[in-house]
Amino acid sequence: MSWYDWFASIYDNSIEAAYREYRAPVAEALAPASGSLLLDVPCGTGQAFPELVKRLGDDGTLVGVDQSEGMLKKAGMRVDKAGWQGVHLVRASADAIPREAFGSRAEAPTPVDALHVFLGMSVFSDMEETFGRLWSLLRPGGRCVLVDVHAERLGLQGFMVNRIARAEIRRRFWEPLERSAEGFELRDLPFQRQHGGQIMLAVGTKPQNP
Figure 1: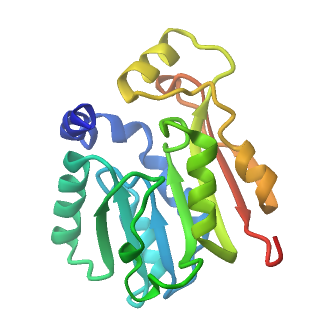
Figure 2: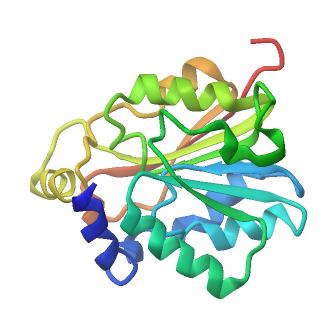
């Protein structure tokens, strides 16, 4: 993960500017209940934390998971500065999150109330398998939001995004959620050329009787 460790050193001051305006609308679409347990993966440098923590309230728990030590170091600095007691960081692969990451809910078959995946589906080594593992952690009735960039064909900017982010933005990232969720919605977010494609938000609820 040395590439992402380096990427973390420039992310907050350069790359995040291209995504900042989406943080609040995405948190609103996810709409986590106050006091719930929310899984943010990959959490990166924690740029989504302020909007998510605001909605979780003082009794909520946010578990941020990332495989990059550099990303988690930046996220930890953000947590310490804000003084958030309910935010816990875990270094792990998205498809192998240890059960102890969920604290008192570690023994629950589906410990997660809300699932936030921002710019993850385009970088997971196996998108379908990783989504399946994450989905299995979400309780029935829980809500999931996926945000990513999609381009049917790569232009020069899309090619550069794939190289820099180690991504594949030609993936139809929303399809695993569309097949699994109730009340599925897919919508475009405001376009920015530097994304290399159309940034999109997909959201849905896990069925009570899957």
